[in-house]
Length: 478
Ligand SMILES: *[C@@H]1O[C@H](CO)[C@@H](O)[C@H](O)[C@H]1NC(C)=O
Ligand SMILES: *[C@@H]1O[C@H](CO)[C@@H](O)[C@H](O)[C@H]1NC(C)=O
Ligand SMILES: *[C@@H]1O[C@H](CO)[C@@H](O)[C@H](O)[C@H]1NC(C)=O
Ligand SMILES: *[C@@H]1O[C@H](CO)[C@@H](O)[C@H](O)[C@H]1NC(C)=O
Ligand SMILES: *[C@@H]1O[C@H](CO)[C@@H](O)[C@H](O)[C@H]1NC(C)=O
Ligand SMILES: *[C@@H]1O[C@H](CO)[C@@H](O)[C@H](O)[C@H]1NC(C)=O
Image 1 (cartoon, helix red, strand yellow):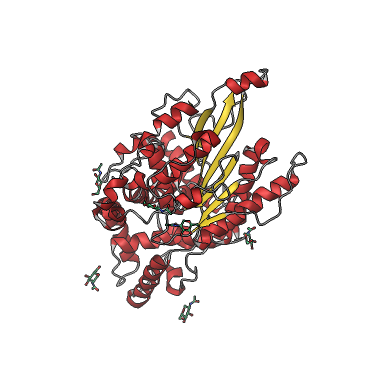
Image 2 (cartoon, rainbow, N blue to C red):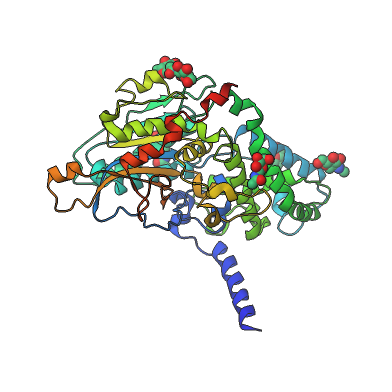
């Protein structure tokens, strides 16, 4: 055997071994699956949160002092939506009715029934949010020990529950910190904004008619259909060969792939050998990369920068963020899109003097907000519908890198180079702004970011011209 051949055998042995050996504690459901494994990082928006590689050191620079932090979080891992659950149940019936036999590895399907429930946070999803609250406390400890975050959540149950579990994690870190000076009680106060079709809610899109119902509403699906036709057919052929008579379509193949993440995130305290659902083992690592890219296209063109009205949906939140970053000095929120002026005009529901803010939302809404923030620059221009691009090739974007379950965007403001300076000198220093997406520093484009990816507050605000001009909100009602 040649040297290279030997290495390949060893690599494939290790790859299989890593899937079956004892998982690290951080990769069990009861720990929120927070480290992630190769395949769980390829499940698009159904990937459990993991710390995304960062080209710029993501820690708080030694010479900087954080003065403000905002987290924008997706809810934790959940069961399938009702619509998808109905699809899966019908698909399983079709397999049970049609399949004349079950090939090697497919035997479990003959007795498999759907028991995942619908829509609700799973136990792992709750744990992810507890972990997220702990992590937020520890990262911003100097502020957190003196002030609890001001919290808002979209009204859907799993979003509110995610916010609650986050505060529980934050709270336990606070109680364990002997230097904390505040003693709040659980549950923490939060503003819950309804997610109805007529509600002005910057954490949930609904008002922009052309985006909800017009031709813009199908761009994501079209992009996915193009890519699906490039990779799915050999997989579907293999599945049909193993399930003769089931007559599966490419869409059915994707549905069977979905069941891998959904079953895995629904597990708790599993037998390590059963950590991954048997659905996961029906597909190869490269097939999972294609699955991830399919989801990346759906989010990008459906809700993100690839949709002409996607980033506009995130404008309201960005304008709120600018008001928060400016504190009292900015004169409050200036927005002509989806903000609720009643809520944002009242310091009880929209204070401007807090150092910490935490907002809870959904993947689709976060895609619009990331688009309005422009964190992907024009990296996504390379998001080809026919050729898979790895996240490194497209500015660090993938659905799994941007909006996994329990995703979190941090916007932090800090004062740098202030060591040894007097309070007066510090006051005069311009504060710096930085954005991290799942622990990856997104170097700010358009405001002359330094080598640490940061811009001055003034330049950052100036660079948010798209949001300050209400994006393309006028196109919503053409
Ligand atoms: C699945 O459901 C069917 C119909 O309710 C039942 O007959 C079967 O035993 C169930 N299978 C398993 C594995 O629970
Ligand atoms: C999440 O919050 C709910 C409601 O307070 C609680 O019942 C549950 O135990 C929490 N989950 C975890 C993992 O702490
Ligand atoms: C704005 O918020 C107020 C206060 O919660 C609420 O009564 C009102 O219905 C909201 N309006 C819209 C359009 O969402
Ligand atoms: C991908 O497909 C969508 C939907 O058809 C389209 O709007 C977009 O321009 C395509 N992207 C590229 C890079 O061709
Ligand atoms: C297989 O499914 C397709 C739709 O996906 C349908 O048009 C076709 O009639 C089915 N074939 C059989 C033999 O059931
Ligand atoms: C809700 O948003 C619409 C569209 O921008 C706006 O006309 C309306 O005044 C807003 N309502 C509130 C209560 O802010």
